[in-house]
Image 1 (cartoon, helix red, strand yellow):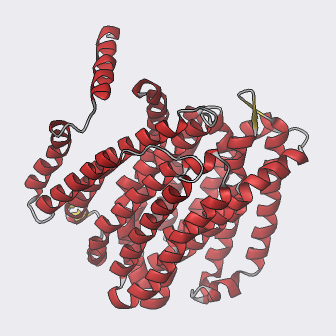
Image 2 (cartoon, rainbow, N blue to C red; image 1 turned 30 degrees about the vertical axis):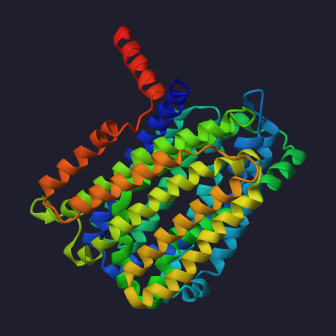
Image 3 (cartoon, helix red, strand yellow; image 1 turned 45 degrees about the vertical axis):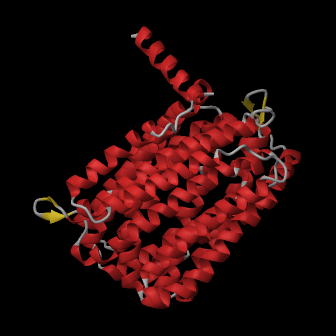
Length: 482
């Protein structure tokens, strides 16, 4: 099985290159904004982008994932299906964004922002529309395994966004308006780069295929909204309960869990098309189970690294005596380990979601996601008044864990996967032990604890004989190739 999973690993690496570089480049905006924008302005930005995240799911109509599952014939995209899906998304997005544009002032007031924030709502509306128009072309690149083109467009758009943000915010002094203006221009540029993909697939729209894809995709919108509740509802609630300044501090430090976010994001980009292509294979459940073990192994190590290293790095004088994050935001660093662990559970959720996706049980996906969303909303409202931003962090962790448990329970009824619980318990115990040893230790000791993670797993017999044999074979083949 290791040999087959090498294809997944290769595509994860390519998607990961774009995701890692892109997110790392975007992450540069976090310290920039922490030094150039007040916490309250950061809070307003977090609140607006939280609603953008919600509406991105709605704008897509679930058709990007539906196209990956149903829009291909004999290994190639069906042009009629692509055209119908793309036109449906673009038409819906344009109409919705026009409504938001003209209702910007009351909408800004409704979400707790000052009157002058209406301009940011208008920018956000058209960012949504342009980004929605890119969903189907990106899905086509993923489905046809053109990972290099996908990565190239993503990175170019992100790089332009960063460059323009620096010019508009730092050089021209446009403040928060410059943040949204840079995003809009960069999104339009990325859409222009994707225009050859769109034009090469446009044909007579197949309405019958559109109805089929909507039947698959619309339940995913419900699930996606639930997922967005888990990801971003804490910031609007925190802003309303504790103020925009605390929401800005929390949102900035939340992003410091970027390492786990990157790992989960780049894996998911490759995992969905990989497992959907194997929907009819009898060993699909075994593949899901083994991938869960491997992902958890890497994810636990990443959790320890982020939890141990982010605080010292964020406060170190790295740039001419200036810390990476402005001192006014350091009070939120305690949320990083909790949020990072939440992202790890989100990755486990994506793996265990596969049986439901393979059986087209999108209603069950929605139920599992909304279980997490309900837990998130209830815990945010219960914990934030008592614990502030730490309450929001614990609510996020609990919600992701609830989603993972829900998809596992629902997936057992139709396509049970032989998950390797003994090995997963070993991982959990070993990770907890190392966290206990290193959480209060000096930085050098934490590095030693991190190095002990793989050594302990190898000595414990974590790898089976079949895996050791395959690893030796792969290493021997690589040496022979050299």
